[in-house]
Length: 105
Image 1 (tube, helix red, strand yellow):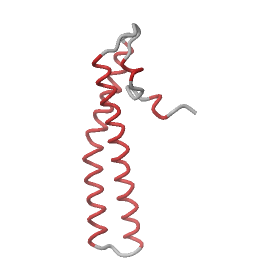
Image 2 (tube, one colour):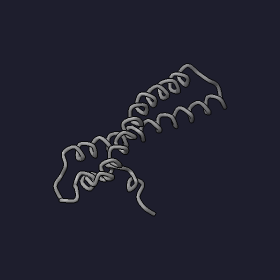
Image 3 (cartoon, rainbow, N blue to C red):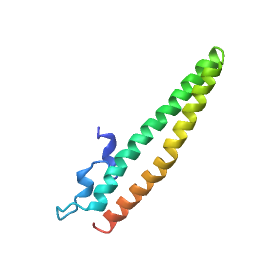
Image 4 (cartoon, helix red, strand yellow):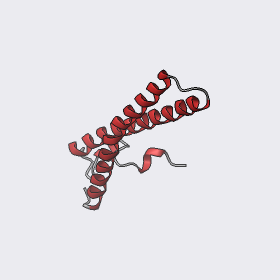
């Protein structure tokens, strides 16, 4: 089974930054670095949403307290703050990598 990051543009680090001539393109290297950060933000953001769902169902099964409501609300807010820009930037990086490949860069 291939690794999860094999299909992601820029996720491989140096492989995405090196062109066909072997030189390292600084734009693609920076793009690969940003792709790593967006991948981390995606994972942490989805983790916050998962925690919010788990705590919500715990509160639903038992009794909602002020602390549980605060945890759910805080996790939803933190997850949204992380995921919104990370998803947009991630799609932009993927599109830019596809265009570079199509142009032969």
